[in-house]
Amino acid sequence: MCLALPGQVVSLMPNSDPLLLTGKVSFGGIIKTISLAYVPEVKVGDYVIVHVGFAISIVDEEAAQETLIDLAEMGV
Image (cartoon, rainbow, N blue to C red):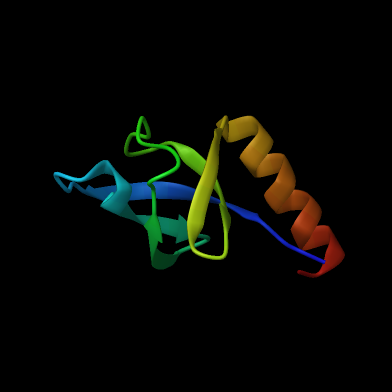
């Protein structure tokens, strides 16, 4: 089973090569450096779905919060 989690982008680390775009993403206060190459239009404050260190899509805050609540209820 694969698991992708929502996180909020807290900073961007620009790079001249869009394939190397990275940023800091918060997962409930835990900050990780994540590849943003698949979502080059992302902005600070956006929520992204992250799978194995790569943001694979941008989601709205409501969807991200619903997912986080569901995961908490499952004990994840």
